[in-house]
Length: 243
Ligand code: ADP
Ligand code: MG
Image (cartoon, rainbow, N blue to C red; front, side):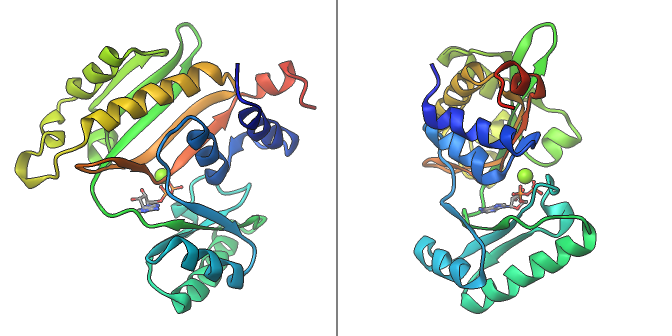
């Protein structure tokens, strides 16, 4: 059985007739499953963004929250490494200006203020639903590894701990996670834990048509999900009678 708080995230999105979860909703969902996400707060004014930034601690990241903007950087909707109040004010207005230029019909729901995670190896964990086999889970390294080399591993969910360990070792670039060529050694125990918790979330939530944890920054100790995207299954909205 799903937690009531989990149900509420989906029913809100269906009630708004959105086919995706905002990043902050997807991160709320992830944290309900015990997944490590950045601290964040959605703000509706410059002053509240400054207040949130000082609570979270500089440097911070600013991102657009808009029902018309799914790919935030493409719309000029992500500003990294904001170091002080002045930067928050400038960034807040810059993002709104960029998004209005690139997506003229965009409604601005707010600006997401979040913790800036230190640079490290970028992992991608994703999922799509195969019409024959069901929900899948994918693991790979970020950037060129997934985009150009298609160096990823797949399983159907639910997965076991052994599956998760195999998924990590299976990718061709595995040596990078072991610390090859001066790369930081990745906390593989945490990656296994993330894969298992993601599998549980996918198994319980049929509302998730596609999931993209992209990227997950992995450290020698721990990991942080810095972006999360969920595409919703519209048939689920009808079958549960959200409307
Ligand atoms: P998009 O919607 O375009 O995928 P992201 O939220 O993934 O936007 O942001 C774009 C890039 O900025 C990410 O791939 C990551 O490299 C970096 N980034 C985003 N959020 C953070 C964060 N909180 N800490 C550090 N880097 C981040
Ligand atoms: Mg992203």
